[in-house]
Image (cartoon, rainbow, N blue to C red; front, side, top):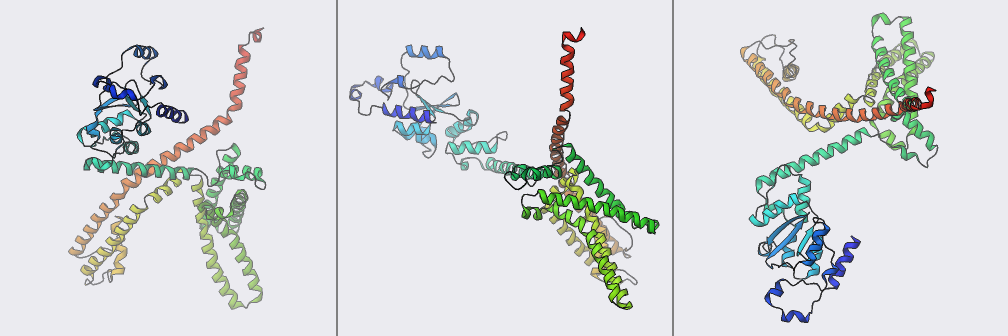
Length: 505
């Protein structure tokens, strides 16, 4: 750009505005007149021609110029447009180029100027300029489907042409395509944010124990950084499954004996110790305590370990109260604490959500729900409307039947919800003909309603899952390549050793 500005300054400096020889030119000389004193000061445009052609042009006579045509060179392709046509659109770039009489202003509109051929050069896309050229000749801006909407809009903004000159159908299609591209880029950006960890290793530079915290962070948050990090990720998923299996077996009648309870308590203690150490390592390696508390996965980790410690706390409180209260109060406290402990133990089921940290499918499902929340909310709205509508209809038809279960509209909600979901438990059924007709309409509406969002959710889920899986495979491949580095080096050394002629002596 600096060289180009220097060159333009030299062109304007050599311009002879008050040339006394201009008063005695003939009409032929006036047409072939070059408005610069020395043509040699202008570098020839040799992008589309070789040196031999340039040397031949020097020996040829000057090319005849046409005042009424404007020579436009766009990316190496030459276009000729009448100045009268361009003047009809004075706010466009080419319209200004045709109307300006000052050569300096003309040079500010183009990228270069070839004096010998009187060509204005523009370093733009020549394929899109075909549509710009057609616009000046016909007055209509056509938009093709195969063009990139962002690139096309950028080009027409450069040439100063408004989108209103295009047909309404083309304009609608272009706007829809631009919205699709912007939505796609937005989803891609969110997917990248989903794939990337909340923090990066560079945030530990210059902080207290930065190298140590970075090492711990790679072990816990980046399972593809090393083999130990991958082992820790597998162990985390393994302990989650062990904890869920232990919680399930604790409800089996055969495991409620003394030996079974002891084994379940020991298994729960081991899992809680591992989850606690994992949570503390994440807390230590976090660069921001506020961001650590805001993260959803960290909240799940905290919920996974809280039931164990709350249970220990309540058991200790229970022992203390049994020493200082009477027998009646002790029984009441034990009953209340037993209910609380059951509720706290039930919170251990949330440990299964820890699998989402290392499961691509669960992350893809969560991302799909966040992206399709409008469709899901609309589906829930339709279900609620159907439940209220058909429960009111079935109540109005069946409430006079003796021994009916549809005694009120709230009592019919369960039947309407089961029928809309097409489950059909059969615990509550209509007895009259009109009631069965209402049930048939309710089931038909449920089939249509359930089939609407399935294709949308499934297509988006499969797309997001494929992208997340591709990113995971690329990271896994990088890790496997680093692991096999030693093997490859040893194999290369062995091949070089065998290729040495002295090896066979």
